[in-house]
Length: 225
Length: 247
Image (spheres, chains in turn purple, green):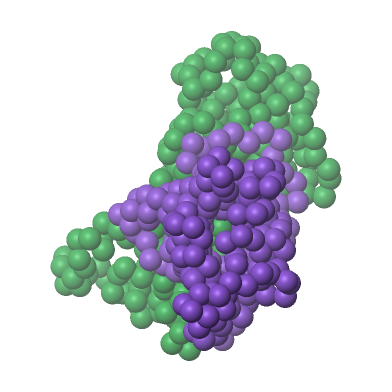
């Protein structure tokens, strides 16, 4: 293992593993969020309450934050190092018909997703964790839970431009994942001529699910509420 | 056909370069790109100017020396083709063709379109070999190799070492080159003894010489004149992780 993470391949291994971890989180996050579309909000509130109080989730939470931080720091290190390798660029660069726009702009896409992430945390997570959010009493007063549904619906119904920002954020994330998903497996070495095609298809399906899933929520509140 | 050439001119490694534009008339569409440059150079010599320096050797697509960045792509617009095999019929009358040297800090320009590619030799010297006394040629089938391995190794061994992968990559990464060499040697019984040491030393040398890392854009595979697949890079990664884990 000597010096593995200082090598260019080792740094990509860190990006790959942290990226895959974050992709699992995104799926869980989407499943919980889609409960916003079910019923009068109690289902979502119960799910949010479970996520906020469950011990296993509490243990994973700091690891998740660490995953984001590591992914961002190593992306910055790799990008800075790679930019030094071509001091004089080409005056004419044509498309080769294969390289995707997302693959060439992962750092910029990641940066915009980070800006969105900060806004997203400020809007919801921070308020739920440290702010004053009204609580509801359910199950004959046995459970006191925060009214997260009203917090989300309040924002999305009152401000149309927040809906727009969230849709754009979801689309940018989708582009980031359309490359990141299969590239993570390629970096891990799980690839050959057959699997490249399969993983690329799965990557697009995954990216579309995430982008569409997260876009539907603000659009639902904008249009139907 | 009549064309205009916009070519990078740089007298030597230490001088600054610049683009010069040369109109060239009566170019035959059957000429190879290098024959067209020969034709340009004849004209330049007749006019008392310095001819354009470019590297070339076999002119039949197997030596890998004629790499240059033509109209925004390594080895020009035709897929799976070296510059020497590119024909002028790929261009139109009146076209302006940009010709640039490979751009990478690991491949410094020596003169005009010629770059120093000895970084590839240094990588090969660090581990791209098999240290066994081969002796006389073996009898056929005395060392058995699976057909699948032989085919894959052959595909990887077609790498010319031209540097198009580095030139095409936005990070100037040499991963496809190294991956082709590591895969080629690791698929044979003769190469497996040193496989772990080889992958570690070659990757370390690549990093040391200032090539960038791989970000999986697939530009190398798209521009490789031999169409070497990035599945070689996945195998390189596997070989590298296994070798490091065993340390």
